[in-house]
Amino acid sequence: MTVAEMLRGSRVVLLDFDGPVADLFPKGSGSGIGDAAREPLDRAGVELPDAVRRTVEHLVVLEFAGAHAPGCVEDVERASVAGEIAAAGTAPVTAGVVEFLDACAETGRPVVVVSNNCEPSIVRWLEREGLQGQVAGVVGRPFGRPGLMKPNPALLDGVLKELDVPAESCLMVGDSVSDIEFGRRVGARSVGYAKSAERGAQLAEAGADAITDDMGRLAAALRSVG
Ligand SMILES: [Mg+2]
Image (cartoon, rainbow, N blue to C red):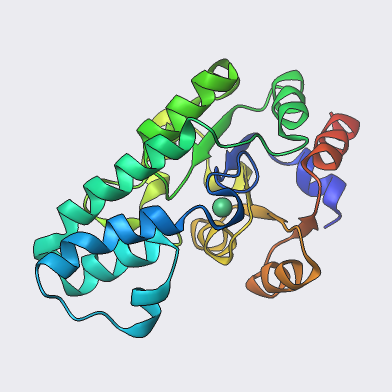
């Protein structure tokens, strides 16, 4: 199947948030929220593996809490939500995504944001950018249940509640292996958004049907298939 055929066959776009839409934590600014997410675990005396101790990725900390320190998971979640909402106040828009959202609207494809970030942060950002009218729905991670984040297909239940469409006619666009894996598990086609050749190779290996390094180019491709 060519990229044009894949795009033509898609009726709904499932769009990851951090990466293809906004840069939620530009230039390592996630370290503050990573520390805040670790704080409840430290307070409870939970021993952290090195990778969890050092990461700037608060979602890695949240996932660890969900799996190994369930008594702390809600506090870690609260710190994560607060940090994401604060970051949404300044996160820059990804180049080309406004054109992409326009192209989806012009070609009659509803867009549902499907993200491992929390819904209030995404909604805040969309409102700040005046883009809330461009999306049909926002599905974020369920509070306190990090095990249900992508690639777990659970988030699709929220999507299918929003729009009555079969998964095969959905197109997932995301910049992480978990996005591509999510697409594969639910039966959707996927486009990997990769800013480096290394990431592109990882997304292709995960099973992405196509790779792009430019949301504007994806918008143009969508317009050309109509
Ligand atoms: Mg992402």
